[in-house]
View 1 (tube, rainbow, N blue to C red):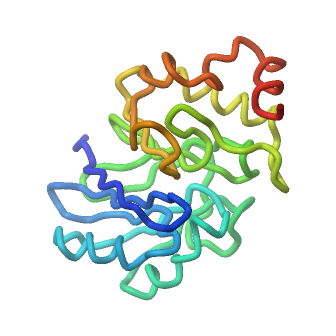
View 2: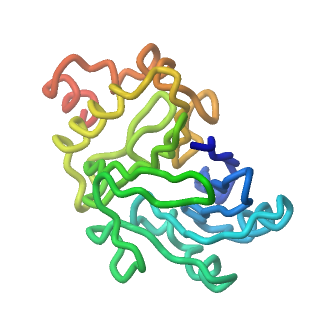
View 3: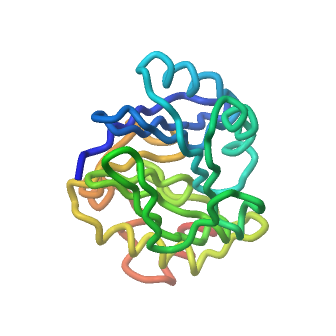
Length: 205
């Protein structure tokens, strides 16, 4: 499987990241969470000669999906999102689905907690983690539809990924723009919580 290229882009005044994910062999790609500045993502795809075939959303909050329409209007692009967060997508996402991108694919992990339909996109060597996992932090669990118990469970799944896995978050909230699972295991107090009770006290305190 070809390692997909990942381009991290600043996409809003709310420190959102959007992502251009593409196959370096075929230059077919996906736009992820275009946020408030979809033109940044579209310009980057054009600059690199990438043809977008997919629009992927990690979850349905407006600061991540506001630019969806502009991306979809730019070409023959299929929209993929979890139905618990975004209705009417061409591809309703579910746990374990594989989405082809050129000569490779991404795998969907359903990671509820920040929102019911939050997902993480997994490549051969990286994750695009949306608002489930940030560098040194994790997503909020006090919003409508949030569930702190589910968020804890989702983070427990992510911490078991290979330590070399790169972490590309939905916001620039940490000391560095992206990290690895190994870095998070060492520095992220939410990941390091030994049990559910301590996680709830830290996240909801």
